[in-house]
Each structure stands twice: as structure tokens, then as C-alpha cells.
Length: 427
Ligand code: SF4
Image 1 (cartoon, rainbow, N blue to C red):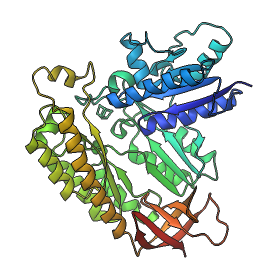
Image 2: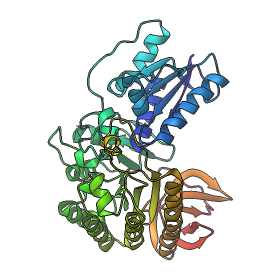
Image 3: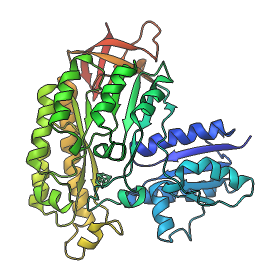
Image 4: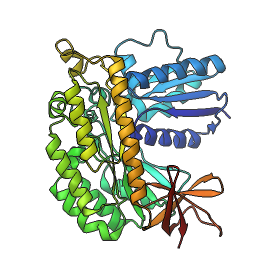
């Protein structure tokens, strides 16, 4: 039996796709093997130079350590390299661009049986069918993006928005009666249903109505999706405790000048109001964000605006990225007239935000002490404690006396904060 291993870089959508690839490869008779498999698949990301560099390093490492194994690349960097003839020096055996990703397993089989790989055409299928080991599943509900934020290469590589149909998503969830959490992932939640005429709120509503899944969460929920209708809906369903109180809202900057240059289409005031509305509805909702430092023309004052915004906002978790100037994006052309901060400045700014992020996250953890929440146990242990997730996706560590089920929710009391972690007990 031929073996394979699949790696994934970047966003949750890529991770969801990796889960689908893992499942399809195994269903097609390949066995999963991390060390020296016959086929290594890399689902690449192109959002930053760092992600691209790491994928290249992995390709060389895999070929060095396992010269007889084949390396197959797919995803956004692979698509970008193929489009721009940048594959010459890369020791890869097969490149499957995003358009053909749904045929990846078939293309690998063709390759192994000696048939030429051909462009099979067609639209990207929305893949969604994989169990994570903890009773949670990543479900890809949407792909592609129409926003064209000035720094972002994703719309060029993933194409226009394509969504799964709500009835298919809920029936997929219903196939797994033990599933405890459906993590709905999208490149841009705002674009969910653009092509099908369906709405994100209807998706949540139908998932609540038609399935019994205890937890529904989003990988990210994009700023444009949080509008009055969404907030009213969140308020209405809060007592049901089915939607996980975790909002990863990528805002990218807190400076109006930079937001405008990024073509994000909102101001710091507008997004602050939306985030505060979430906080007003539920002070234990965990709000996280992505932020880019060192964008074109970002001065000390602009950076300070972002810092002040983040400090005052109810955001408690930051993912910090240093701006990468990607070929073919609008920012690439804007860079002819706008100065890009040096790497040293970007690193300094990233460090300052990381410190603020750490403080805010600790503060939020401490705020949770004393309350009760449902917990979903994960298959990880730490120093005699079992790891679990609270109703807002925070990790908690619980000493388990009786055997627990990974496919069941429990009620827990959050007892204390110690060295960056929360501890609790089942009640
Ligand atoms: S919303 Fe903006 S940052 Fe996100 S994928 Fe679309 S273009 Fe890229």
C-alpha cells in the first residue's frame, strides 16, 4: 500500500482542505505515514513571504530526507509559482493549482499509474467531511474572495466566491451523530452565499434547527459580516448556547489612514462599535484579531493609532503579521510611491503589539475565573490534567477523576488562573 502525509500552511480553510485531502487519500487506499511516505503533499499559503519561504524549505527538506518520495504541492503559493513560472528550481513532482485542487487525489493516482496530469477544469468543490480527534470538525463553507484588499493575493489565487449550499452543510454535519463542534471556515464569511443567494445567518439558524450539534463556531468571522442583523441574531440565540462565543475578526489595522490604503472599506470607529456591541451582549465572548504591522507608509503615528485602538478595544487575542509586499497586488504597485517601513521597524512594532496582546490575553483569562461554562474535552493531557475548551474557545485544564467522554459536553467551574493557564473542575 502506498503511503502519504499531508502538510498545511496558513489559514483554517487550508487546514480544512488538508483534512479533506487526508480523508480522500485514505479512502483511495493510501495509508497515513509521517516518516518517509511515498507521497508528501503540501497545501501552501501565499499570504506572506514567510509562509512561502517555509513551504519552500519544507519541499527541500522532504526531498533531502526522502529522495525516493514524491512531493506534491497545492494551494496558494503553488498556484502563484505556477502562474509566474517560478517552479524551475523547486524539486517537486506534481503541482496542483487551486482550480484543480478538488482533483488532487485523482491527479496523484494518474501520476502513479504513469498517466499524464491534465487540467481537469471545473469549479473548486467545497470540501467538508473530516473529524478532528476531539469531536470537532472543520467544515469549509466558502472559498474565494471578491474584496481585493490592497495587500492580499488570495483573490488572485482562489478566484471569485464559491459557497457550499446550506442543505449540504447541515446534512454533512448530520452524518456524524457524535460530532460536538462544527467549525465553519471561510476565506471571507461576508461572501458566503453571494453565488447561491443564501445567508450566513440562515446557515447558523438551519444548523441549530436541523442538527443537534451542541457547538457551532467560526474559524473567522469577517468585519463586514458583523452588522446590525447579525448582532440582533446573536442576541436572540445567545440563551441557546449553541454558537461558540469566539469571534476571530481580522481587522488588520486600527489606523484610518492605513485601513484606507489597505482598501478595507471600514473605519476604526465603525469596527470599534461592532466589537463593543459584541462585548455588550456577552462580556465573556473572546474576540481575537489579525493585525498587519509595517504596511506601506505606516508612520509612528499610524502605528500608535493601531496600538491605541487595540488597547481600548475589547480584543483580547492578537495574531500579528509583518507586511509582505506580494507581486501583482495593488500594494505592489502602490509601493512605487509609498515607503515601506524597514524590517527592523516592522519587527519592533510587532514586538510592541505582542507585549500588549499578552497582557490583554492574561487579563481576559483572569476575568473568566469564577464563572461556569460547558467544556469540550480534547485528547491532550498536561501534567495530570485534561485539556478542554470553554464556551468561548479558551483552553482550560481539568483534573479528571472519573473517565470522561471526548464526545460529550460537561459543565465546569473555572477555579483559578496560574502561569498563563486556567484550571477548573467538573461540576
Ligand atoms: S477579505 Fe481581503 S484579506 Fe481577506 S481574503 Fe479577501 S482580499 Fe484577502
